[in-house]
Length: 291
Image (cartoon, rainbow, N blue to C red; front, side):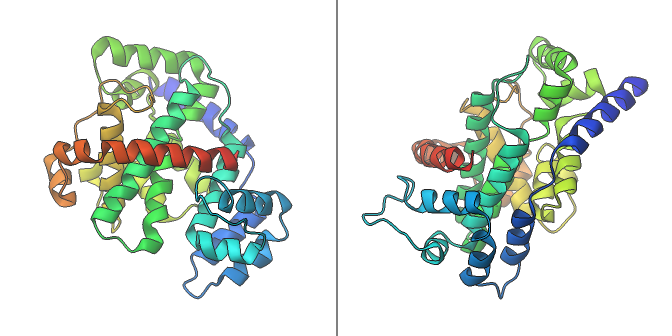
């Protein structure tokens, strides 16, 4: 097993190393967005030099996602209306999908189901953040963490298709969580793979922590427990309500301490299901524009 794990890790690292780095414009946008003194004009200077991204920003503000009655033609106005964090997440989503793509399924994951699941976790994490009265400027971090929470499955699916199918079959046969089957079959799981990707892309620590610990929230000891717990719980909701599919038919239960800390329960999830489905449809427009 240890020998196989080393071989699998080596193959995955080669695969990830060959993935393009985040574009300079996206890296700069992330830096600006993390600066509390940043202004829309600062973003305008960067985005105006990237015609593709500029086109996506304008397409988003004028899309059904926002439903404006008048077309917006000014980039600065679009940035102001969208907000710095939404523009950052559009830029980041564009880069992520360019690198990993929506693509076609390998032998394991159905990518349409995968992205629907990911969108569900993103929008649900954001709704939990609103319930926690998180600073509105940070809500998009919860969405992005949820969207990326299973990103480590894509290299596993694409680069290690046969053992990954074996892991999924093992999980179904044993009625076990997929993460346990991944460890049993390959000695490595999707959270570890995701951590390698997110560190390479230098994404902020909040997102890294949420993605890395969404299957082990009580082992997390850092300062970003709210986003870790939100993504953990949103992932359980998506799997339990079978919204999309990311290969996990028998997910780990959420520890009661996590539900208590967030002040949510299954009745609350019943209440928000229609809202989540509506938000997913809106977010699909966002994701389509990013591709």
